[in-house]
Length: 317
Length: 304
Image (cartoon, rainbow over all chains, first blue to last red; front, side):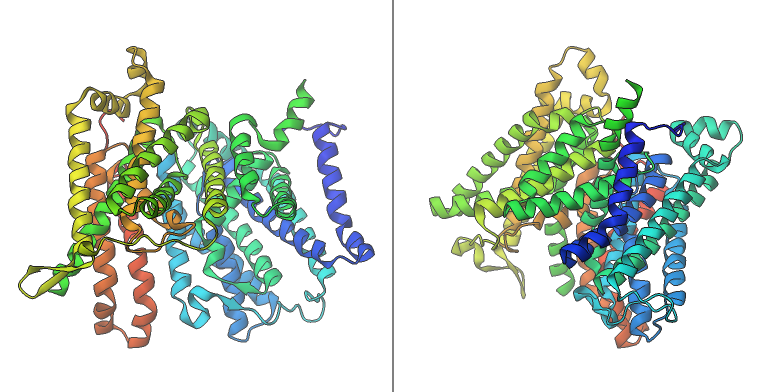
């Protein structure tokens, strides 16, 4: 964590990635390729979701296998309000954040006492429940999902229908989130959280109410992912229970681990790599997962510390 | 009458879940491996059976061949990939076996095509049997219950009465000690994984005639199987059996009776919305309750 401001390979890669992401709309405009915008907006949003997962999983050691539920709750907050005629993002987005935070609070209270595999399974169970709740919402599309006809409005200040505006908004929110996580992790609070990851019993013994720390961290991650969900609903103009299917939670874990945990830019690297790889592979072959699946297996077996670990290792050597 | 019928349906679902879970809980308990690809073996079993049954023109022969093929697939999978994940943290397991799940879904699409298959039953299993005066029940569902019970019995004998079973139990309680006592732990792991794969494949092919054989069929039932594992206690076959029955019956009864029950208390509209969601949630609520009261599950494996 003690990165000095020197040109390490990791710093160079992160800076290059940010530069590329900042220039995507320029490229899309020149090349006249709107699809690139759709893809990269999605990358930014998923990176934000994976970043929030990294906060609890990478730094806090809480392996949540139900993180897609927050994406869904954030998305449904936007969708439901839009359907009921409340189109303002100033209402929708705070509602998305609040709903996710509230859900995270409930799940956290009930599950943070358990550890290891049991924690994985209980977070999964709660996400499944939310999945079925959404499937049962007949008024909001049930299993088939709900089309959102109007993106969130911001009183004419921001027009989210403009893809460039929306892209840079996502980019800015992602950067702000990374900064926020960075501040959290390097605060006294963050140090306690990381201490809990290494040895919870010791942290309790020296007097920290570890459960409360973990709970606050868990709720913050949920809230952040809820905002990502609100963005995702605006991006796809569509919500459905499928966005909370357990394999979506698996995707988020893959992004976080693939990029490297608990590196600050790991989730962004992971989301970019996974989504780009999916795109490229599906252009090259009709059976992309035939390559992607074994690739993930190889990463799990050989690549400790994910992609970020490659650069971090080089720095030390 | 309706209640008995639904109870039988619940038992039948529970038996299938047990077949799927027995291997999962052993792999979990002995190798400490979170295996998301277990549902893929369930799917493979169903596809194998549909193919072999078409070749041999016999449901039973096809089923036997499919179980053998699922065992072989499990052994190959263990030796080539799974083996390298032992001793790693659970996140690596999730990542690696999630990759395998994607791989198997795509492999099945490549080999068998995107459309589902059907596995048809021999005509004598299609009939309904009168089990009580006035109560007819599909013969095939009874077959599932009986066969699965037989397999459970065999598994019990294998685990409780044979040397291999002793090693398996020992492995579930204390892996390191079994290895330290000079047992060929590698071979044991491979066998256990193959056994789990065969059981999962068997569950898949037994379910196949009731539902269609399709890609991703293992994904939702895998989560139910994990619920069973956690409720029963990781590594405990007995726990898996009890929990599987419990989950099967509660899930089925909930789906059958919750809508009427809610209708009595809520407006029809609210009941129609709430009932399906609530009945799908029942088993997860059960799991959350069990974990809150007995964090190690109902029958924790000794020494863990």
